[in-house]
Length: 99
View (cartoon, helix red, strand yellow):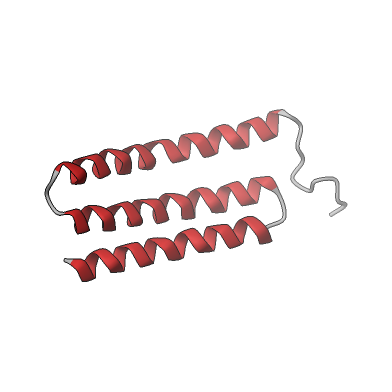
C-alpha cells in the first residue's frame, strides 16, 4: 500500500508542478486559469488520494476524503468565478498586444 500511496503522491505532484510551470509560461489570464484549473484539480485529488491510501481506514482517512471531495467540487467553481471576474473587469485576451 505504501508503494501505491507514494506513486499517487508523486503523480499528483507532477501535475501540480506542470500547472505551476504553465502559470509562468502561458500568455494571459484566461489560458493560465484554464490550464491551472485542470492540473490543480487532478494533482490535488491524486495527492490527497495517496495520503488517504497511506493512512488506511481511520478517522484521518475520512477527513482526507472530505477534503478531497470538497477540492474536486469547488475547484471548477473557483476557476469559473476567477475567469468571470477577469472577463467582467474588461481584461482582454491579448492583454493589450496586437495579434
